[in-house]
Amino acid sequence: MHRIAFTLVFIIVASRLSLIAQAPSTNAPQQVHADLNQLMRGVLYPAANVVFAAQNDNPGEIKFVPGHDPAMSTDPLTSTFGGWVAIENAALALAESANLLSIPGRMCSNGVPVPTKDAAWMAFVQQVRDEGMKAYKAAKAKDQPKMIELSETLSVACNGCHRKYRDRRATEKRCM
Image (tube, rainbow, N blue to C red):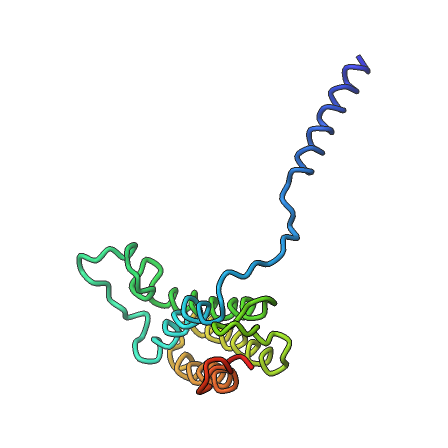
């Protein structure tokens, strides 16, 4: 009887150890798939535009187009998760994108590495993160006057980085 019980325990423990050995590593290295320009155009720019939309239109008053399926909308503001929820999500996308801006190995469109070790770069990235979180809190509170105020500070954060790293006459000098 003890031998059968021992054998069953051994089989159970061995099978569990086998499952653990097959589990994917949680320490997988971060992968970079987009250059900085693609990341800006695909994530930050669209998210910022959604946040900035709250300056002109109250997201709580956005009307859906009759006959238009919100689930098929390419405009986050008129999608199933539109209005203030779209502003919240876009603000969080900006805050989270700060992590993407900090990943080593990302390149600028001209082949120059993103200056992730530069203190000025990291300060701009932190501003985007901070302003994104402030915008999220304002959107959560449905505070349009605060969104108008934050749009200005978010714009200043973006423009500071653009002036230092992007707005160069010669594209090859960007990110330097």
